[in-house]
Image (cartoon, rainbow over all chains, first blue to last red; front, top):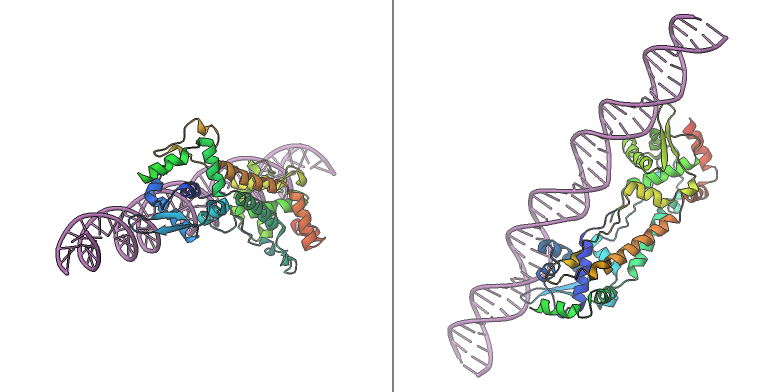
Length: 157
Length: 157
DNA sequence: GCATTCATACTCGGATATACTCTGTCCGAGTTCTGCAGG
DNA sequence: CCTGCAGAACTCGGACAGAGTATATCCGAGTATGAATGC
């Protein structure tokens, strides 16, 4: 089980956007994080399709959050990049072979699938409890109170 | 985020093994579930390396659980097949770019990574709470009390 | 009748191709700013 | 001095290759069984 590497980029970008003033172009975000510009653009497109960020074209265009940072959960960002499909996909092998489970018994989901899905639900619940605003506050606490002031200055330059 | 498809096979095989009497060869397990024999063998090897099952060669060989079914958690099986590495891998992009985080601040793990790892821990905790014995009991309850009697009969034939 | 030997059939284990998804990149469409010409 | 227009620069968006991993497969190494043989 491996999460797309772009998730990390997207989350950090959302944190920066939450404290930025105007739209921030993808090029700026890529430079700021020292990562590939073109590949980051691909992930920002996914965020745009998911409705988390809005994109404005033109000379002073860029990306901006569509909602307040405390209304965007970590789960929203992860699902926007990595997809909404569950990690475990039941193929109903219990219906195969010489002793298949009866269709009547298969009304209920397979016990294995239920346990796996419950675990994924716990994972989603944990991600859902954290917002982009929380993460931004955490960065401010860890790195320093004036962090985003300097970030805004650099973005404006 | 996609889990290896072999996880489902491995879990179901462990459930069968938990109620089998002697060693069960991979060919039998594959036939029983209607899946590829050779590919299942690969996953059984992974279970063997992880120490969950023991393999005996020879004419009446096969696989058997090394521990009681209530001492094998779903997490054990999943990690044996899918690996023990976390899905989210922090690349410390906060240290890149024109405004890198100070090494002092990086003593602590990145807030994003902390949140992601906490979610994965919740996932693991959920999987750890379910044992192979629980799953077998669930199958018995869903499909019928005499399920594993018939399974043993078929395995013996 | 019993012990020994040998061939056999069956098992697991690792090494080997293939398909697919993720990663990374490029170029085109669209929009806004800016400079300039005209009134 | 103000207005309208044209050019240019910068932006996003989708279409296009390459690499890595999961999937699927095959063949060789090893072992217990069972029969055949000699005593």
